[in-house]
Length: 458
Picture 1 (cartoon, rainbow, N blue to C red):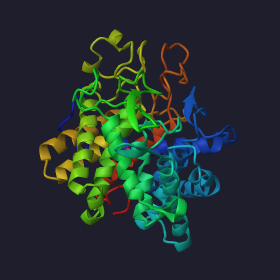
Picture 2 (cartoon, rainbow, N blue to C red):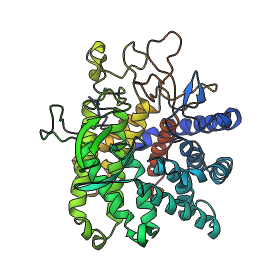
Picture 3 (cartoon, rainbow, N blue to C red):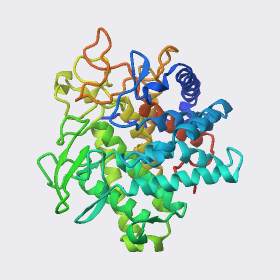
């Protein structure tokens, strides 16, 4: 299990963060200068160079959002102008994309980050520009909310697999509904029926907490506290849950660790947002206390599972039920080995999950639960300490990736196996690099005592 370093402090990572941002800027410029955009959005690296391959164009927002985060961290105008220009010229199709569940990924990473910077005063206020960003977030939230399946106890934003499919990933993308709601947007349906974006967002969160997360309550033979299923399948005729499933994990009865990480971070962020919403706005949906109880249970369960089922350095293997893990011996009692012969690690899960651990830890500490909060906070710092060092931080100027040993789709065999290796390793992903930058920015702001970083502006 993860060996938590209880002595580690955010400031101890300052030198690593400085190198991280230096390397990050070089990687962004390398991609800007050398990637052929005509091939599609960059998704993951193959032999050190970004390549494209995907189910949908779900990574473009991470590409341009990375430049915006780089500006936020360093103040270098090149990255602001690059991210701003690319957002203006290339992101509009993502706002109106009715075929995906990834609006929060693409549009909050670009339009949302630019709006946040303007609201924080980090870029000059321009009313027309601000209105442009706000409109993009408003409409994106509504388009995402329209992708809706009703079930017996609520509903959910369905995945690109179809109306029967709830993906655990979408717990992080649902932020776009909340951001749209906070901007006062009105989502309307047939006959001008007003549909609450807050209600749909909360229902999706509740469905994810109930069906995507397990709590050791006897739901099935594989029901363990904090385990997650990548996909939950429903009968759309009667609204009943049918079974867990997986697209990118090993099975529906094992835990794909990137899906676990999405849940860790998604629930933690929504808890932070919940604190800012007035009680009277939440009465119609069960009240703040009950909503918090539901979210907190899911957040703690998933973070606990991560801690218990990740090697001592905090970097997980791609699935906790991967079929050849047993060949690694006591793999949870030693650091992850990305160069082993049997199963890949997934550093992108660590990049996402670390932020979830940190946010949950801070949330609980501020709620007065100091001991529990410290556990998650220190776990998050421990993961970041590993991620910002060898063999995960990419120092090779010829490698376009920032965080090495990321996995995209192990079951489909999409990931590159370098010459001389038996498993996929040594490559990066656009989502892994982006989320490492988010987590690094989060910590940097903590260290410098800057405004607390959230996807919404408090």
